[in-house]
Image (cartoon, rainbow, N blue to C red; front, side, top):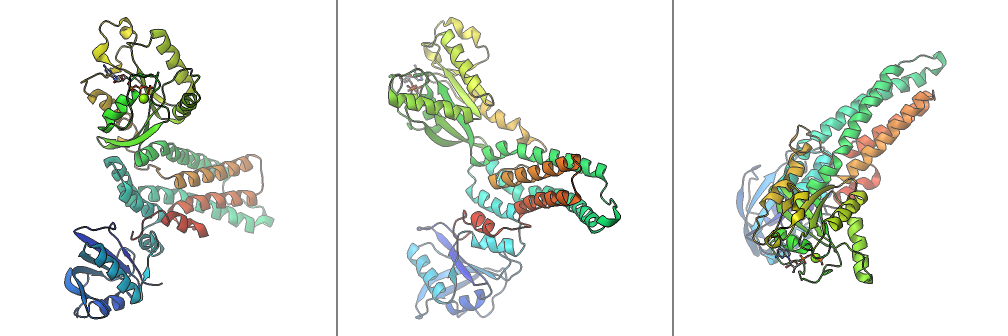
Length: 449
Ligand SMILES: Nc1nc2c(ncn2[C@@H]2O[C@H](COP(=O)(O)OP(=O)(O)OP(=O)(O)O)[C@@H](O)[C@H]2O)c(=O)[nH]1
Ligand SMILES: [Mg+2]
């Protein structure tokens, strides 16, 4: 394989910038630019000057040599810490390319690590997730996947299927003798167990995905309820326009913010009412759609202008249209309440108002996650859509095989479906790899990773 080179730190200037080289010719290429290094001691920081081909000194650097296979990629790797000037880094890259290295493609270092069995595909993807993590929980999730908890569980599932598939194949070889190596009752049990296990893993996807990409929160309620005000308070900036005009927000506004250990994706929406205004109507349609997809809806009610009856009607409609969402009611503008009679109809409801601390709402939001599988013993959390899709297709194959068994179809058919299920499970960790899989997985990485 060609030796590759890339800048592994962000581009632009910084205190240092690290260039990474990997491949068989790593040492011979580097030696051109470090003629003074006589002994490349492995895994020891070496201080040396980087020479351009014309003999000029470009920089004084610190470098580390990791001979393969004990390196990130499994190949010979050299990491060079330059002073972080974009001129120095671009010049060094140009020099190394002229000396024979190829510029690395996105994710190519990690792809090589995968090809050299340094990590499996789930772990490689976890490296990408770790780099992208924006909260403690997303970081923890990536670390768990890197440790291989998902991979180990998948390996166990696959092994059980492989053992059975082998027995069924054996039967096919002896079809004339009409022998049954794979006991049908055990096969039923295996299907049941595997299906339960895979369904359990799939059920963790909503949570895993929310932890990775942000827990979706939808701000909903009548116009003027104080939705945009609350959005701005969460973000700590004047992101959305706030006015006393009902119907200020038209288009939805989405932002991320971190609260405690978790990342949230909050969406401010157009206030819900019957409107003749075309733009506002479209905004309201969008609000309903978002709510039907949302996981947690913050339903804001302003008791000073929304009658009890109106509030109840709106609540009912929200519940009907978003049956799967958690709905958190919040009464707003507590500083204006005075003696509002209907507060007793909303006991223990959270509230906001001028100068009211958001602590209670924040605690409640965190509890949606903390009480869930996150803190539980479930080590295996699916957070990647690719993994969820593969689990789904293995489940479909297992169900087909089970139906086939019920209907007394031939061993050949069952063997075929088992192979399909095995293929889908194997594609998650990369034990079986379709042509376009690697480029789609590693293409999402940044260059130099
Ligand atoms: N006194 C008081 N006024 C508030 C409070 N929260 C919001 N307001 C005011 O209520 C009005 C409406 O607030 P917004 O945040 O724009 O309400 P909204 O729900 O986004 O309204 P639409 O975008 O029209 O749907 C503004 O004049 C705010 O200043 C509060 O806690 N106390
Ligand atoms: Mg608004």
